[in-house]
Image 1 (spheres, rainbow, N blue to C red):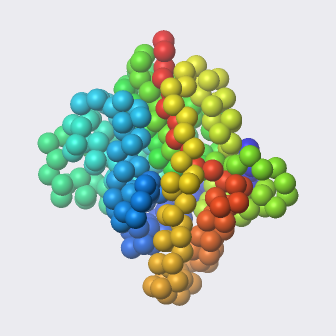
Image 2 (cartoon, rainbow, N blue to C red; image 1 turned 90 degrees about the vertical axis):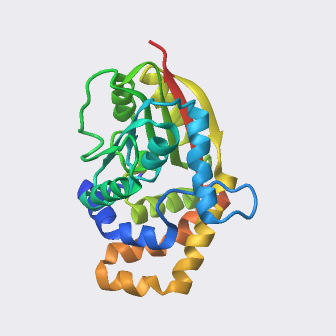
Image 3 (spheres, helix red, strand yellow; image 1 turned 180 degrees about the vertical axis):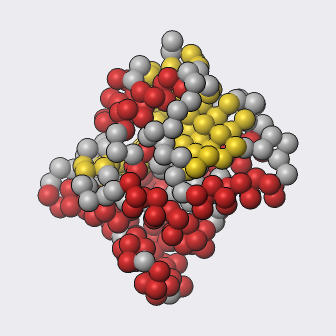
Amino acid sequence: MIACSTVKKRDIRSHYDLSTLFYRLLWGRHIHHGLWTADETPSVAQQRLTETLAREAGILQHDRVLDVGCGMGGSSLYLAKQLGCAVTGVTISPLQRRWAQSAACLGRLPKRPTFLCADAETITFPPASFDIVWSVECTEHLFDKPAFFRRSAEWLRPGGRVAICAWLAGDRTDANAIQQVHDVCEGFFCPSLGTQHDYVQWMQQAGLKLCACHDWTNSVTKTWEICRDRVRRSGMRWLAQAIDRNSVMFLDRFNTILEAYQTGAMKYGCFVAERTR
């Protein structure tokens, strides 16, 4: 695991309150990576990542799903609409919660998701409350990742599963790679990035049985080529300068994360694990 000690919880909350507009303008309602197989549009690739993770997790009609780091509600709304899941979304950002709630109201869903503004590291739920704990690109922002998986295991019913997509530190341990990962953590407000091995170990230590572990790096890297080019064409950096210096750093690090994927300093992983008892 590679850590960045300068990241604070308040910075993460502020980042998503300030940067949600940038995410929406740059990337659409899903603010996670796309999963490419050819020359699809970003929206198709983003939808494929959600659909693929749902399939890997074996999500069934009417499952109770906890969406940790739900953002603007993209995954929550998909799971509620397409699979009839009873979804509870959690975001640290009040702005994102309002955005997600508005989208749910406009969507006229038969089973509307519930969205909570809360810290995923302190929120509590009764044992066995959910069939699925789902988290796409949120665990990067957690300060105590092993504790999150222990708590997730408690929230799951026996036979329930965690479904995770996460940015990962790669296998390289040279100083250059470590610096690249540190710069990504700083620019994107991640207190640390774990390796694939770390995630597997944390899940197993929480009593979860690993069902799937995939390296999707080559299929998601195009995300940052597109984002970088859109920032350059749009002049969005000038808008960021007028709002907040951290937003400028965030946009400037798009090329950093792209290079980290390309050089192997970072990976992108998908994990599914089951509570067996």
